[in-house]
Length: 322
Length: 253
Image 1: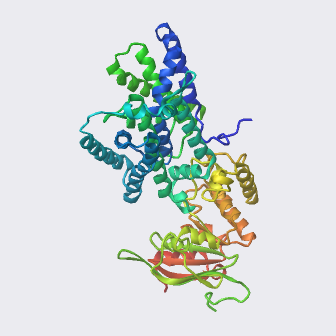
Image 2 (image 1 turned 45 degrees about the horizontal axis):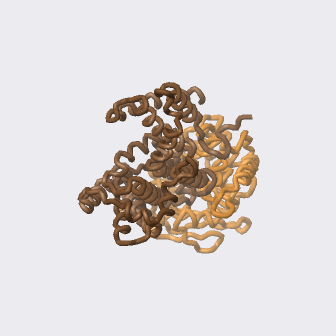
């Protein structure tokens, strides 16, 4: 018997899964020499995707409670910059990462507290903090990359932990899946997740039931700040340097991925598995289009087209199912 | 004999005296006295802006009165947040703010009061079973505790919200316009839910614009106008026509 609104995983949306399978099948068939399923290509996806993916998972959770975060393309290089500075001061990279976690939390907290205390749209607030931190990071770094290879090399275990491989499987993929599982458990099986959905679905009802919706939102921002530390550090270790443009464009790609994952822009509806698949879809689209020799600098045009198409199909399937 | 005098046979549940509430320069509640006995059903009526919502928000801890005293079971209490009010056993069902439409019935019933194991993980099975029991207790038979609220009818939604109040052992349930924008059939359902509460000995404050709705269920009716209490009448001492006349005129005599 089919239960209405499946019991444990709220709002699971089958159309994202269908779209994901369709896109994968499409690229397997139509990429030259079926390059898409070449193991080297899959490894490359698994290595590159988590940079955006890990943060986007947090963005998805935040969007379920009805808010946006556009500040991530500044928080990521900011964390990465401080990481490079700490390494230059001779601090052990693992310790540097531990020191960074509270910094990420504070950056997220600043976003959250401004959003809930002013009551203004988070779109505007985090647009502002994005520009503010971008200015800070550009003037501190003079936009010059800082090589960190010589500080990381003496610590092969640290490097393995963040960007190594198990067999062919990139560690980044494991981190990505791990974060998705942890956030999924939190969102669907924990009372905090229930508060997130309640806050996004009807803030007044949640408040009347004694849920501190300001705390819920701020905590989601803090989680994103911490994820930015992970993503920023992981990315700069892989690149071997800090780069002021790390994470550029992630804010919009994250929203695109989350929306492809069927999350309502007004909050209250969503599912971690769908967010995960939404991120995969965006990255697979990028990758597959490049393999099909779409002009690299015009790739966004194709993704934009695909997004509109997806939104239309998604809407159609949803209405059919309803 | 004035109905304000306490009757030795019934126990007073909630009493408020000399309540004043200001919003900036607006004097929303002016020296209002209000009381309700255990198991009593009081209809709170009045025109828009009469202060009905403000009064119940003071009781439910959403607003704090600038002046006045609140007694619960004879003891003076401070209600400064919705949590305080719920701790006393007062549950408020707001018109559009009671439920989260995208969430399931059981997630709504336990919203903010989830039964959990270690680390805050939900006891989903307990939530589901107790939700179904709570609904049955109200005479509401729905297929599954996992149905999304947005797919329910207006009457069913009120039923879920009232079942929630009942499940958490409310002694006083405040219903804010529970019959607004409902169909005739749904209104009858909701009034039946309210009667269920009465049979279980739970006191109810029922806010409405519609005197006919209140007349079928209330023991006593309190009329507010422009922030002041205009009348406090036992149902048997009045009728719908006199009351509507009173509300429209806005003054006694």
